[in-house]
Every structure is written in structure tokens, then in C-alpha cells.
Amino acid sequence: MMPATPQWWRVDPLEPFQLGPRLIPGRIWTASGCFAYGLTGHEMTAPGFASPFAGLGAVVTKTVTPAARAGNPMPRLVETPCGALNSIGLENVGLDAFIRDVMPELEKRGVPFVASIAATCPEQFGEMARALQETGGGLRHWHGLELNLSCPNVAEGGHDFGKDPHTVAACVRAAREQVTDRALLAKLTPNVGDIAALAVAASGAGVDAVSAVNTFVGLEVDLATGEPILPRRFGGYSGPAILPLALAKVDEIVRKAGVPVVGVGGIATAEDALKFFALGAVAVQVGTAQMRDPFSAATIARRLHEIYLGNKRG
Ligand SMILES: Cc1cc2nc3c(=O)[nH]c(=O)nc-3n(C[C@H](O)[C@H](O)[C@H](O)COP(=O)(O)O)c2cc1C
Image 1 (spheres, rainbow, N blue to C red):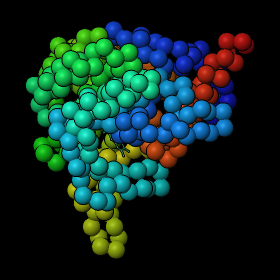
Image 2: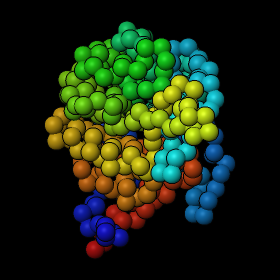
Image 3: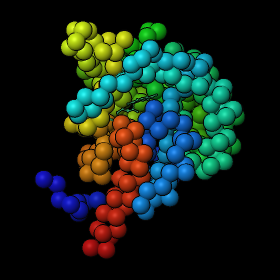
């Protein structure tokens, strides 16, 4: 059992911290795809919370692609006893609408955000990064760019995209050439034998951190038909079941790659988040838990802040 207040926790998750060229407002973020574009829920309150955004270091926005996408056919989400299997297929508004409508609104509302993008080749990553930089360069609340190199659901040849260290390095290089004053992160797939090799490649090409991990490939069967439930057979598995799997991937990266890691996978409580920090993560992202309870990340930030204050006094 973990002690209620781990004595080693001496970091204030609400304190800004330096990530590459950028001072990020805090260490508890929401994960891409699990809190939309950070524009909804502002009016929600909970006991002690003015909104679900209280104390968040960043919202990683839903991944956008060069053109808008309608996503995969339904059903797209299957709940399992300990997690969720999704095959959203990157439904998104597209880069132009994101730049035109979403970024200015996030800026106006003061939401710290990391933009997430996906493309089908390194050149396209570079072009998207340039477009973001050109129009978003002056925004105070745009803190980072996360390259989604790992979405397992995109049918158009996306399945193996982020599994090759050379491709990962090329994508990072293309984006880094365009975006130099924001934190650049590469989000890695866990569906490989050697995730540290991907992290090493991303690091060598200039990322400030890697986000680990995206979802694990999974499948659920409908016993009435004997067929997979998801129309595309496979989905991305997330939620509490993957916590130990994500911790293992993060540990591998921390020990072998020496690049800052933003931990993500299965976090639902402050204690879950602390396990990533114990392994050396510099920040964490909350995904599936945020979809169940939009105050999850805010609650984790608050709890870790309390533990920090307690240890500081003690
Ligand atoms: C419904 C859903 C949609 C997601 N969409 C994206 C996405 O657009 N881009 C991305 O990088 N990750 C996406 N993810 C992956 C999450 O950001 C996260 O890496 C993963 O779910 C593991 O964290 P968790 O167990 O806390 O959910 C999505 C996850 C879910 C459940």
C-alpha cells in the first residue's frame, strides 16, 4: 500500500516549470482527445472548483489533421470492465478551423494549451507547424506542440506510421524547424518492442519531451455475433487497465533515452499520477478519467498541491 502522503513529493504541480524554450503553467495536463478542444465545460462547477480548468498546466487539444475528418463509423467506443476501447478515427475540425476558430478562443479564455497535430508524412508535419506558428506565434497561452505519431486508428496507412525511428526523427525535425519558441513533444505509440528507440530518435531530432503513451491496440468481441464490436476490428485501449503498462514504457524511456517524459496512461487519481512522477516524468496527462469526470485532472492537481504543501511544512 502506498502511504497517504508520500514524503518524497516536494514539487508543486501548480508551479510553472521550464520545458525546452517554454515556461509551462503546471504539471497536470489533460490528454488529447479526452477534453475536446478545451472550449467546453467552462461554466461547470464542483465543490471547491470554479471550473474543470482550475489548476491545469495545459489542455492538449484534440489532434487535428490538415483537412477536417468525419471519423470512423459507429460504434466508436466500447467500455470494458477496466478501460475503454476507442476507434474514433481522428474526427476533427481540420487545421484551418483550429487556427481560425479554436486558438483565438482558447487565448481569449486564458486556457493554457498544447496543440496536437497528425499528418501522413514529415513534410506535412512541417507545413502544419509552420501554419500554426505563423498565426499563433503571438499567443500567450499556446505553450506547446504535440506531434501525434501514434494514432492506431487511422485507416489510410496510419497504422505503422510512428513505429519507425527514422520517420519519427524526420517528423520531429520538420516541426522543430518551424516551431522554436514553444515546447515540442512527440507522442509515442506503445505498440512497439522498443519504445526507447523511438524516444532516442525524437530526442536526437530536437523534441523537448516525449509523451508516453498513446493507446494500446485492443479488440473486443460481440458474443452474440462472434464478430469484433468495432467496425474496424481494432481500437485503442485506455483507462485504468493500462496504468502498469504505461508505467513500464515510461520507465524504459527514462532509463534508456534520457529525454524528459510526459506520462500518460490510466491515470485516475493523484496516487496514479505520483507513480509517473516517481519514475521521473516531468508532467502527466489525464485521458479517459477526464471523460468520465471532467474534474479529474483538476482534482489530481489540487491533491498533489496539498501533499506538496504538507511536505513543505513537515
Ligand atoms: C476517446 C479517445 C480519443 C483519443 N483521441 C486522441 C487524439 O486525438 N490524439 C492523441 O494523441 N491521443 C488520443 N487519445 C489517447 C489519449 O490521449 C491517451 O494517450 C490514452 O487514452 C491513454 O491515456 P488514458 O488511459 O488516461 O486515457 C484518445 C483517447 C481516447 C480514449
